[in-house]
Image 1 (tube, rainbow, N blue to C red):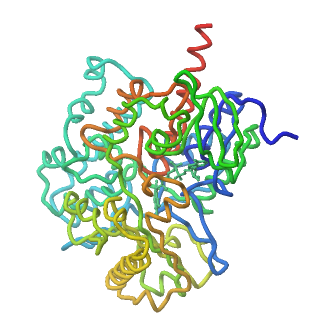
Image 2: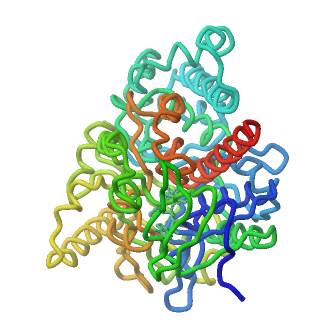
Amino acid sequence: MNFYKDHYDVIVIGGALAGLSSALMLAEKGKDVLVLERHNLPGGIASSFVRGGIEIEAALHEMMSIGEKDNRLKVGKFFDDMGVDIEWLKVPEAYHASLPGLEVTLHPGLETFAREVDEAVPGTYRKVLDLLNLCTTVFNSVNELSIHPMSKAKMLLKHEAFVKTAGYTAQEVIDSFDLPKKAQDLLAPYWIYVGSGFNTLPFTIYAVLMADYVGFGSYIPRKFSHEMSLKMAERAEAMGVQIEYRQHVDKILVRDGQAYGVRTARGDEIYADYVISSSYPNKVYTSMIEPASAVPAKAIKMVNGRRLSLTAFSVIMILDDTAEHLGIRDYSVFRGDTMDTDALYEDLAGLGPYRYLTCICHNLGNDTATPPGTCSYSITTLPRVDGWKTVKAEDYDKVKHQVAAQMIDDMSEYLGVKLRDHILEIVIETPMTVNRYTNAWNGCIYGYAHTMEDHIIARLQTAEEESFIKHLEFSGAHAISGDGMGPAVTNGRKAAKNVLDTMAAEEALK
Ligand SMILES: Cc1cc2nc3c(=O)[nH]c(=O)nc-3n(C[C@H](O)[C@H](O)[C@H](O)COP(=O)(O)OP(=O)(O)OC[C@H]3O[C@@H](n4cnc5c(N)ncnc54)[C@H](O)[C@@H]3O)c2cc1C
């Protein structure tokens, strides 16, 4: 039996959330799909690992765009429609904000959230609710416009709030609500999930973030993020997708400006009408296209012009007692010595001590997360690539342990518990770990940063002119929607849709 067929409709490079979403959507439309994954498991970052006999979540804090069973948002609906049956658990709170002068727990639901901000900063209810309602209006417009693009004039009529706020930063729009600083601080902690300071971040992105997470709450799979990727892979195979693990794609083969196949590290040449890449455009255009002369100068200019978003540094611990006994009360804590997002963004360029941490006690969202009598606690910061690129191999271990120690000590002080005395297992993930496991460019987890010049709406408009090689699409956190696991699924679907649209257009021309 041949390992590969002579020809496929589509080859997908990478079997993580984005790549598997592309594969599922194409298989549903009857396309013949091959997924090539370099790891021996599906999932990329959406994975888990075992230490001391305990399964540990590798990354996920919370998923956006899932929604209740009877009111699914786009990612939750996609899983349901594809028959990927996940046991979703709703995260109990939005977050606990531990900021100068503020120790406040906020819950999802626009009115609940506004009321709780008002309890901490009296007199702000109406303004906070108005801001959140504006976010929701913009969120609805973005969802509609990403499916049904329309002319600017029509947009102005149907999506006035979206058009009016689109040219402003998050900070400019928030400032227009004239809220006291403490209330503004309570509205900012999620900024790290989109990785840009508010003076750079388009309001549109802030609006989507807040409407989705605060309006609908966030979710986690009971069996960790790996539940998503394992079930997606299982379902894709049941739908006829061929998935091959331990197959690293070295080259994307191009002829006459069009992709026609790939070559793997073990030398197999495999042919297809289309290639979808989970590998970053930076990697593809600088070293994967064969012949290299098929890469237009504009492609290199494009990747050099984009600002890479954040990577991750995470300390994940299994503790020897329950959350309750250790005095851990919140699923999610955002802790910083300031809520000036632009100053925090600058701080992330270095190697610590980091001023903004995001912490999760998995057991408070998932009662089966670890064996009875233990709990899982992770402390994460999302540094920029800048600082970590400067670490020399001989210093790596020292720097890694210094940063982890600072984070453990900071959260020990906050919790009033010496975490070091309770560690059964500990794992430290660095930008290098992310790079090594997923091949992500510089260990980036969010693709390219959202800025006023480069964000989802601008990317939708330039997508066609940035399609430098015919029949080659990109699917991953580095594609149009950017950021995180939910958007990776959306990006995977978008890449598949582009392939299906091109197939239909070319068929119509025959
Ligand atoms: C510590 C941490 C916490 C996080 N928390 C959250 C969170 O709470 N919520 C959230 O939404 N997001 C979170 N993220 C971000 C999120 O995990 C990523 O944005 C998302 O999983 C990216 O998915 P992806 O499919 O684009 O890529 P990846 O998961 O990076 O997968 C890429 C896949 O392609 C494969 N691949 C790459 N190159 C090749 C090649 N040449 N040949 C074959 N295979 C290849 C890789 O092996 C991998 O399987 C977190 C990330 C980290 C590290």
